[in-house]
Picture (cartoon, rainbow, N blue to C red):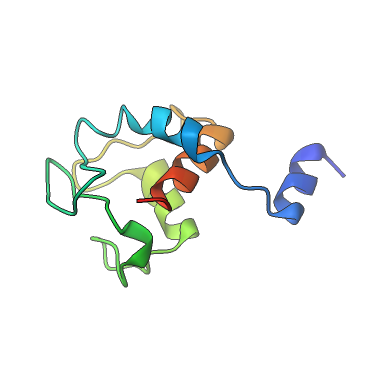
Length: 96
């Protein structure tokens, strides 16, 4: 089994401190400290919301898909952020 598979099976999560650094590029369009819209929606309490702006459930898989695919004016980050950066970013978003 590949090391990456073991990480997934163990449920290893990202590092919120590193995720905060990754978020700096997101902060151009998103507020981290409020849910007020900037260019994109404010992300405070993101994981406490019932639904995302696209109507999907606010869970890790759907948020990762939004990061990967972008949409509604947001560029896709699938090829910009690696999997660890996305794990770190999601860990940080969970702290908001």
